[in-house]
Amino acid sequence: MDQVSQACSMSKKTLYKYVANKEDLLLQLFDFLADTMQVEIDEALQKHEGNAIDRLFALESFAEGRLRGDEDQLLFQLGHYYPELALHLKKRREEIVFGFTKANLQEGIEQGLYREDLQVDHIALLYYGHILAVHENIISEQALDTVALRQTSLRYHIRGIASAKGLEYLHQLIPSK
Image: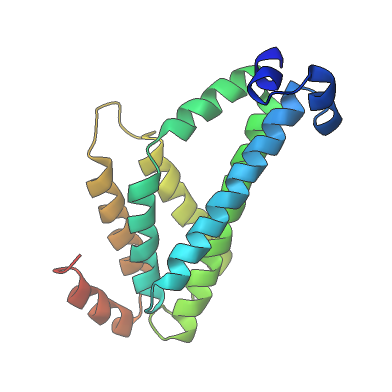
């Protein structure tokens, strides 16, 4: 806290007017970062025109440019020193992914690109599992090309939820993506 207050050019007493302790500071910081990431995702997707499948590819493109895996190392370290904070951050990540995934599934169903019989909550959970498996590399101990693996996972996901119309659209996209 000494270093933080010095970097902010304020006394520790002033710093403690804004945060209760080190854990509170970290919580506020990571909530701010999660909120910022949510806004960036929303803005990136709003700029991208297209249907639900296009938006999944746009999100994947966003993730390729922004996510490097460092946050998983950070979560591991936080889990060791601040397990409640690490759990909170994992829940925030889940909220962001589930929110987007459920909205995308509903949009795709309405557009006729995804099957009408989908269990949206189940599919959102399965898709999140794919993301974690790829992102955290929990399946394989060998180094993998995570970009290629994420692209394969995304296509696998779309093929599992797509209607005939959605599959036709995906096959048109694949050569260009």
